[in-house]
Length: 414
Image (cartoon, rainbow, N blue to C red; front, side):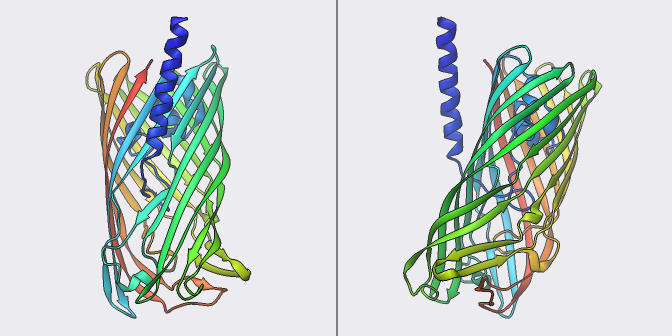
């Protein structure tokens, strides 16, 4: 009876921690507007090895990874995101945005329990997609393309993993995701149009881990495509004559496939690697449907994104593990006409370091830091179309951006 009550208390504490983590804000730090910071451990390796296990946070990329951890385990990560992005419009008007990035915190929590010799169940609470941007100079010319933009997602992902044979484990899960979005753009020197809405969407996850020999682990994970139809209210002094009207904005989110490997080089050293594909080509347009068959639309025409990383781990002592990694990310934005002021994205290079300290037999503390170098790019955009017709001239300019990430986490074996 005492053990049963103890487990009840553990699950209550875990549930409280998961709920608290979901309350944090988020900002896009990967290509497009997905969030890579789902584990402090893997932030330290630039996501190298992310789908191949080694940390419970691996279940975000691959639900089969939970089978590496016997008993009851949990993990929580909290990442401070410090973006710095500047847009300089040079025609037809000239002006500078100042920093459009909004500092934010991204969090992720995981729990997993071994039900039997070959079966594990788990739960993950994450914010897989998000962005938050607002120019310091809200009156600069680019404000006709966008002012304040926010997207928050909260994703609950219950999973199950089954070891079908020695060295082979499969996993699957369900995604239950809530999204809240806000979009503003200037329509005149004295007025700003705004839409805000929310929606639920559902999807799945699947994965497999293979250990062909001792010291080698290969993981393959999949997160399904989801679509949010954000239902809310639109206000515009021009289009809706100052009244609030219902509106629906459709946001297509990509499938993600992640392939990772962990290779033991010596008893204290491991080599890590990841290749990830993101189906951002589904994000061709952001349409906003309004009453009377009217539609505002922001064309994007994005392409698929790719992420490549390599890293390593070194056990400096029985209680201290050091790690580092480097990554190169190919942005879904390939042309100035595809770059939007809300997400001034481009190809990126990640440099990451991290460490884990085994505080006790049951608690491990993690820390990580990444700096993201974003390639400079151009921008050539016109405001959103209304019923297929342009609502303003094409604005041209340049974009500079970089991001710093600081992360802390804790892993617990109950």
